[in-house]
Image (cartoon, rainbow, N blue to C red):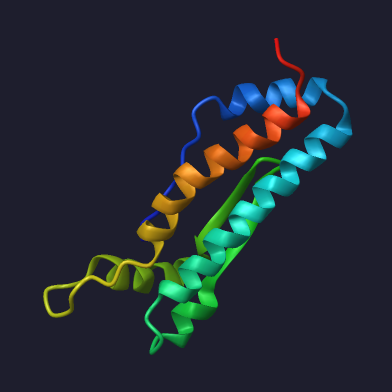
Length: 125
């Protein structure tokens, strides 16, 4: 029972469809920008997680789902439950968020990063 945090970028599917029609070079550069963002989220989650939880620290990973979609989080169902207990706390332990802050930072940063990339690469309409 893992709790998932999701950064939702409005218009992502439409962007993916448009990129499919563009040269492969453009799509691969957008993919590189997405990977850079995912790496920053991954590093932020690992640095935010409590240090006495090496099991949880080691369970944070990333998995690419499509060129513009990368899952970053606690991978593995057996470890995810522990991540939820740490993230949200329990009746005897206060919450120690590590995923939510990383996701919130990424929401704005990724949108800006992709906008900069697209404005640089795509001609104005």
